[in-house]
Image (cartoon, rainbow, N blue to C red):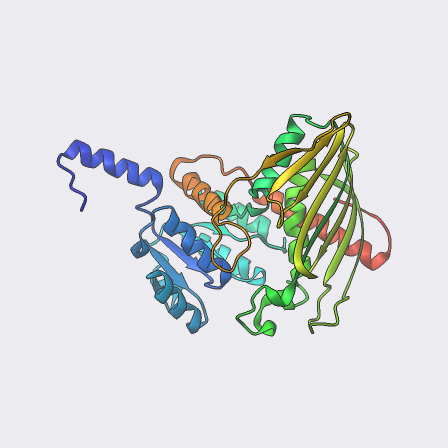
Length: 359
C-alpha cells in the first residue's frame, strides 16, 4: 500500500504519475490480435487495468479481453469516449478512418495502426490540428532492433555509400491467425490483402533508411494454390531511390516457414541480416577477414509470436509522452501517406507493365 505523508510529496507523486501517463484513461477500439497487444503495452507501461476500456463489435473478443486482462469492455464506445484521454485504433485498415473521425469529433487524441488507404487522411489531419488533437500513426516498422542498427551504420558511413539491396519478407497468410476462420480475417480481402498491407508496412522502414523513392516497377499476382482468397499474394518491386540506391523488394504471404532477409551492398562492404534466425546484423568490410556482428539484444515475445513486445511498447510509450509532454513522436502521418503513394504507384506499374514515377 502506498502512503503519501505530506502535501508536497503528494503533488510530486501526482506530477510523476501524470508525466508517466499513469493517470490517463484509454479506449482500445478493436480487440483482435493487435488490440490485445496494445492492452498488454499499456499494462507494461504501468497503466492500471481500471483505466483501460475495450470496444469491439464482436462479443467473443470483448469477453476474451476482459477475462485475459481484467479490463472493462463496453457495448457502446460512446458510453466511455468522453471519460478517456486517448483512443487506440486497432481495427482492420478499411475502418480506420471511421474511428479516427470519431476520436476527433469527441476531442480525443488517437493512435492508429499502420494503414493502406490515404483517402480522407489529410482531412483528418486538418481536423485534428484545428482542435489541437494528437493524431499519431504507428511506427512499428522503424523500431525493430535490426533496423535501428542498419540505420545507425548507414548514418556512420560504416561500409561506405549504399548502392543496392535485396529484401525478402515472406510468411504464410493462413498462419497469421490460425485460431480464427480465414475468411473472417481482413487480410484475405483484396483491398486489405496481407501482401498489400505488408508492402506498405515494409516501405516505411526502407524509406526511413534510404530516403524517398523516385521510380518503381512492380509485378504482382496470386501464386499460391494452398488457400482461397481474392488477393495478390506476392508483390515484387524494383525501386530507384532519389539518392541513386537500387532496391529489389519481395513481399509475399506464401512462404513457409517465415523468412525476412535483407542484404545490402555498399562502396566499402556488405551487410546481411536474417531477422528470424540470427537476431543480429552482420557486416563485412572490404579488405577485412572477419564479419562484424551487431547483436540486437534479448527480446520478450508474447507466447505464440516470433518477436518481442519491446518495439510495440516503445511506440505506445512515445504516444503517451507526445500527449503528456509534447515530446516529438518521431514519425508522422505524412510518412505513412508517402509509403501508400509508393504502393499505389507500384500497383499502377503492375497494371500497365511500365515503370512509374512516384508523386
